[in-house]
Image (tube, rainbow, N blue to C red):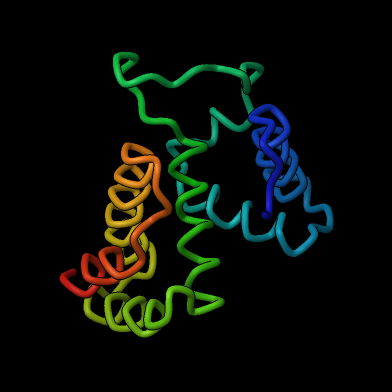
Length: 139
């Protein structure tokens, strides 16, 4: 597992990676990945630099959880890098080429990942990789 279970530590990791990038300090490989995802999302810059890293993001609050969204980006990137589930790297490559934008491809793939994770959590079962790949192939 890349991150621990503590939400505050995780969010602090995002804030630290972003601060280091902005201050032109050296970053560890994981920090570079995090900073890259943050950089692609200017709408979340205030969330990672603000004083309220412990803020709750609830559906009725009207604002998506930026840390969840960026974490899903990192999850997709990890899956593509390891080609797990098998075939996801080819799907990512083809979708990126078709859309002409890796970020847009990741966003489309995130929808499939989020739905698969939600189903797994709702049924208290592991994620269904075959169903996940089928969703991805339909993009």
